[in-house]
Image 1 (cartoon, rainbow, N blue to C red):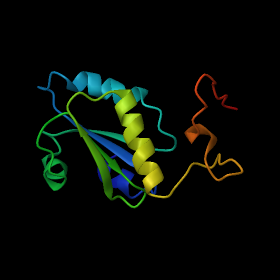
Image 2 (cartoon, rainbow, N blue to C red):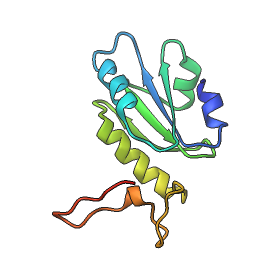
Image 3 (cartoon, one colour):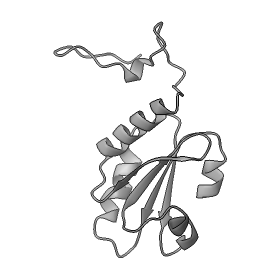
Length: 126
C-alpha cells in the first residue's frame, strides 16, 4: 500500500520514513511491525525512493514516523530512536485527540483497551 492509498483509506495511518544507509532504521522498522495499533495502516517509505513524500512532510532526518488521522492530516511525529512503545503512545494520543475510538467502547464511552487499571490491578481483555 502506498502512502497516498493509506491516507485515502479512512483509517489512521502511521508512515515510517527510513533509508538503507540509516543505522537505526532497522530497529524502527521492527518497532513499527511490533506496535499494537488497532485498525491503523502502517506504511514504510525509503526517503531515497519517496523523495516527494519526504519533502511534502518536511522529513529532515531518519527514522521519522508521522501519524495521520482518518482524514489524512498529520497529527504527530517521532524522530530518532523509535520504539514500539513510543509509536503506541503517539497512536493513542493522536487517535483519541481526533475524537475517534475503536468499536469496543464500554458503558462510559471509553474503549476497554484505553482504560488504565488502578495501581496494583490488571485489566483483562476479552
